[in-house]
Image (cartoon, rainbow, N blue to C red; front, side, top):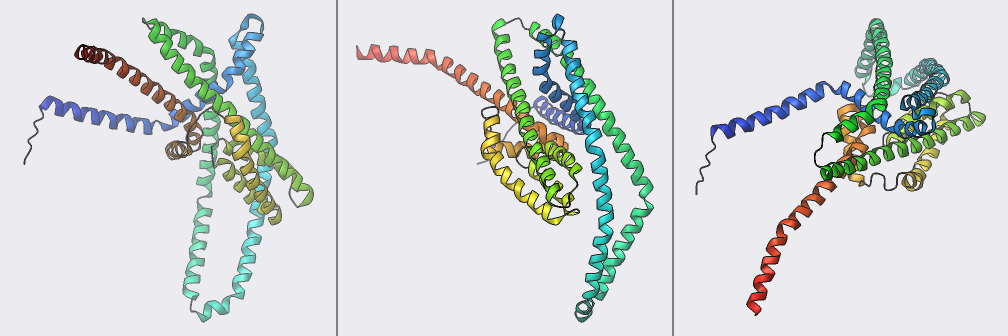
Amino acid sequence: MKVKIEIDTRTFVRFWLVVIGFAVVAIALYSAKTALIILSAAFFLALALNPPVNRLARVLPGKSRVAGTALAYIAVIAILGMFVFLVVPPIVQQTAKVAETIPTLVNGATNQYKGLNAFVDHYQLRPQVDSALESIKQSASYLAQTVGTNLVSVIGSFFFTVTSTILVLVLAFLMLIEGPVWMKRIWGVYNDQERMEYHRAIVQRMYSVVTGYVTGQLSVSAIAGSVAGLVVFVLSFIFNVPANFSLPAAAIVFVLSLIPMFGAMIGAILVSLVLVFNDLTAALVFLIFFIIYQQVEANFISPKIQSKRIDLSALAILGSVTIGIYLFGIAGGIISIPIAGSIKVLMEEYFKRAKRNRTKSTLPFSKLLKKIQGEESV
């Protein structure tokens, strides 16, 4: 049996215009992903600072929100300055340590290779080994030739990072000052008071989810970073580990712990890799301790702090983090969970409203059915 489906030209054109429109929007969003990352970072920074800014504005004379925002920013800039002053020099020192250690490791590997000459010659592996060594030499030569270009690229990345950080701080500052005014204008557009209150309640729920998650995750990350720094500091008394590396270790674990589920473990692995160039035993002790700490954090610390703030399943969290990281990198992984929590709030409200409307639509039919059944029984 053949079925013939007729589609008029207007419907056909409208369908493809919608498809093309979605494709254009997707391409535009992907092209502007750097700007979106900066705006998202500023937005979440503003959300994180909004509660203390509100408290400061209520306490300060005149209840000035600008003064409260300025005080909060002074604290943020002081923390960033302390970070640069205390963390960057040890990182540079450890980088130099790694650069000094690598030639020693290469020489050791070369000596071991000389001891395997008989094995290589016996199994006729000399051409393959010589080819691999030649390839390594060519790569090293290429890196040496392009060192100037790499240096320019690193300097460009540094200035881009500084510029992006300043832009994030300025945007967040403006969001904190102008945010209440913009929200008042948005709510003033509504003519239906009941509808406005309904939408305001939804926005308030989303705001509570985002701010609760941000403050909770900052607390969990601060604990993880403090533990990592304290462990490295204690190891410096036992093994050949510099004590000033404890602050960079805390900073690395703190930043990467902002990525849920596996960020803290990535930070611990990076710290362990740096410790390897100082003392192998210290690196193994740190890694084993942090694996144990991760179990404590996952089962006690994080649930205690983050309980009922997001209420997402493990699959939803992992899926949203994966999408965020693949789209926008580390920043996407950090902001993916609160976005998923906000989407969950919207979906819950949508289904709740749909169920309520469906109940209202079937109510007259139920009354009519009961009336008919009553008349038949008489």
